[in-house]
Image 1 (tube, helix red, strand yellow):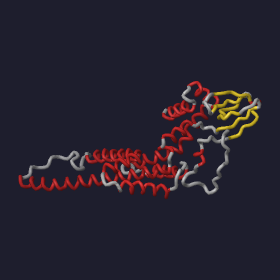
Image 2: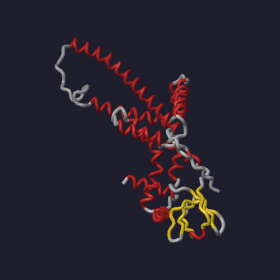
Image 3: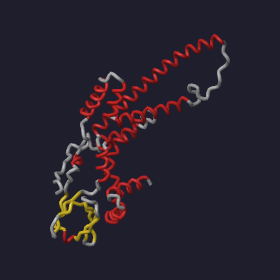
Image 4: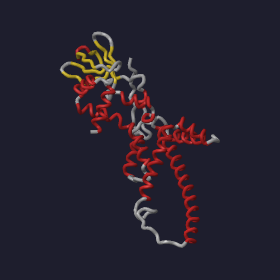
Length: 293
């Protein structure tokens, strides 16, 4: 059900929010082709988000098989915009610059401007860990969780215990604050590192570009009657080309006899598709595709 919802939503975006055009795309490309076409191109961009989600709960749900599979997908499938050393240096520069601020407010203001998503991600990680920790402490047999009341003590023993308990709670609070700071800093660094390598899931413009781009390759159709069409070919049937024009996302039918040539091309704002993953095959070949007119 969720996949169908995602497919329908992306199809409407591709069709410029026109249900009639979306229905025409389904009829021309087929239900199966539309389903696979709308989902498959998004998979590489989902791996970084899945990685962050898995790292957020790695301290609680240690499903190492899933974590290793997601890491492998990020390294071998997701398109990379930076190298690992460059992302590591960018993360160190962020912490180095933040440490130069003397006031805590200035540090948080810089981090909020430079890595707002990382601060939100770090807050979510701390909140998830805090909720799970409180649930664990409330279990029977753990500190105060389902324990029976202790027997009555003398007044002196009670004072000594209260005094010792005050120090315990003080050191406990300091330990918790230190743990929160370390967890938040690690989450902030991880987000900055992943965001530097995999730009698309974290940039609004890149997300819009990836979602609204059709799954078919753009083509330059030269017509015998004159002129060109930069469009996506949805299908060829009964002597007619069903095409989706890139200019206004309108659906058009062109006679096969009127098409002189079909040439795959690349749009000017589609230069990011040639980026490979962090780990690529040794014999990986990059096709040279001309820009669309």
